[in-house]
Length: 314
Ligand SMILES: [Zn+2]
Image 1 (cartoon, rainbow, N blue to C red):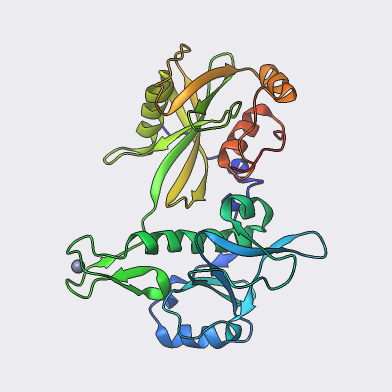
Image 2: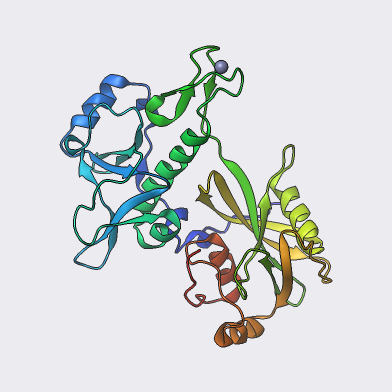
């Protein structure tokens, strides 16, 4: 049962905090408005390709998306995604292309969202997450799931329309639950997946199945992966995770049993850690923390009570 929302759980991760972008969805079908917005001198455009965009370090030590005015980008782009406007009225677009443009200067470099999300401002991280999610969806949904015909892009990247049967297809987002489970001794249950590097432990996670509530998914996944039963489930925060199309829904959950029996398929190993045991394991290098961008790190920190050691992006 969801008992409360803890907004403090969203602090510290660019992908979970307000981004200052109004998606302005009502403009997506308005071709005249989009054309005017595209040619406006303050409009900013970045290229997304294969989940990557160009990022650059600023003189004052920040990292930002490399964006150009629209007039520097081709005008007739089919894969032009309108992403929204900010508080100053600046309009943002992403262009999906087969390759990123040549480096604008020496320091600009291509980066995926796992790396860039931890470096960019909340605004830029949100813009990139939106563009990467649309690109992933466009790439994987070129044909109509109703009749098999090739579909056409519409609504500034947010719809694909079938010319044969008229079906409209919308970007999908797949809900996944990610949960920090604690026991009656306030120890945390962390697991290691088969394909992870040795020592990497994190929270348990899994996809919500059809016909299932997210609370039921938390209970089922913990039981399936670790053999532990949980009672109280508490929602904390969410995070877009467009790899390719997930939304991570973060929870804390209270175990009602302690015996661990990993499934051996998703989880290779799972252990209960006290805060002291985890601190010792971090210090010795026996345990590596999850990637800093991940909501998993934030969930563990909420319980751990302080920032985790810097993780290695994965
Ligand atoms: Zn169709």
